[in-house]
Length: 282
Image (cartoon, rainbow, N blue to C red; front, top):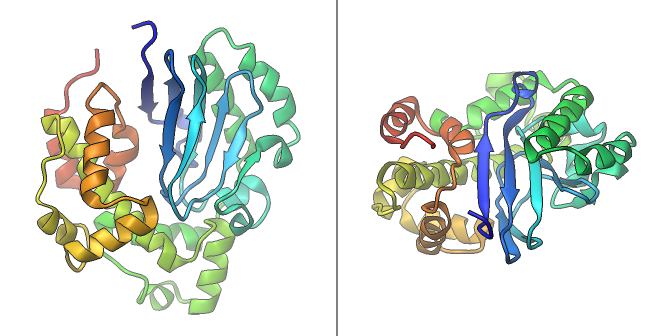
């Protein structure tokens, strides 16, 4: 409806699937929208249409940014490990940085006019996806494997990674920071919390709320106990798990669909359960 805000997240175009986890279109209604960006291990290329696109590097704590009233944002969420090759520079130099994308890619200056003049937000998003796909460089296959082994559904940690990947701990940390923006231990903490966040989003999609047993979910998502989850949630998101649940329920039960970003963070059996129960978008 006119005057209302909306957020639609989808899987990326096939040409971008190897580099991006999801893409989105966000519209602010009659009032500005405070958008929380959470650490997810990757980076984001996004543009408030009519403005210069921005590159948000890998986050180590949540930040808030304002979408202006009446504004439309198109964005691409990059997978962990892609940023170094895409930006052509060590990813850790962009950690917790929000910079004009024109500082990274000179061609982005021309794309700014293309995005602003697009006939529809969907056309603008398609143009942004095409640009990112053309700009993507080679990823580090060793880091790609490390990221895969650190995904929350893998139930692994960082201690065994050097031996599994036949590399020293120091070299793994260096290559991970160059490709991802953070070291393996920090990435593991971020992805583990993303696993918890995915369970919250799945609960909302299935039942319309996030009424959960925090103690049980903490253990099931790789934490020692609920207190451990609380410490990590405060550290990475700035809120307690209870506050996070309440905020997610308040913002995502009004039609926001985040399945493209949370489904890959769930175990296969949880994915099937959510897909069986998720309402079909109108």
